[in-house]
Amino acid sequence: MTVLQGATVTLRPTLPDDVPALAAIRATPEVRARWRGGDDLAAEIAADLQDPDTRCLTVEDGRRIIGMIQWHAEEDPDYRHAGIDLFLDPAAHGRGLGTDAVRTLACHLIDVHGHHRLTIDPAADNTAAIRCYSKVGFRPVGIMRRYERGLDGSWHDGLLMDLLADEVVR
Image (cartoon, rainbow, N blue to C red; front, side, top):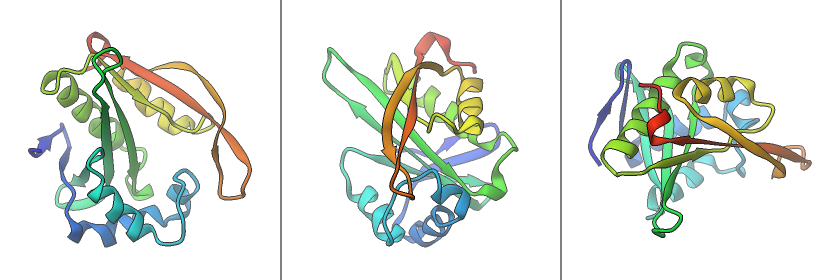
């Protein structure tokens, strides 16, 4: 995969050397509360890098690592689409960098990979993420009840959102 340049952020293929910085971001309380995971976050990120079905891109602001955006594709021609997931350093929140990262990847998946539909599934109570994705053109599809287990062991709802190629806000 090539390097993608957004208005502000750069998305580049994640390297093994990025894992410690990304694990530190995933370990922040704000990110940890939203991303599931066990005790070895570095091992989980390294496993994502080895998963042939997941493409991982490091998000940089300038030359500083601020997070990771991932995507996967359903290639069955009758259901073809791509899904996106993202985490950013809380120090980067509220500056439009997440919106830029999602928009940059969405445009790439539509324009280069030919996807007509993209999905993303934030926690239903993650208003900041929902607002970010909405700015790119994602729309709510519906609530996925008891979709993911939280750190406290209880089930939490997720919001399925999708974006059609002609709806992206460029």
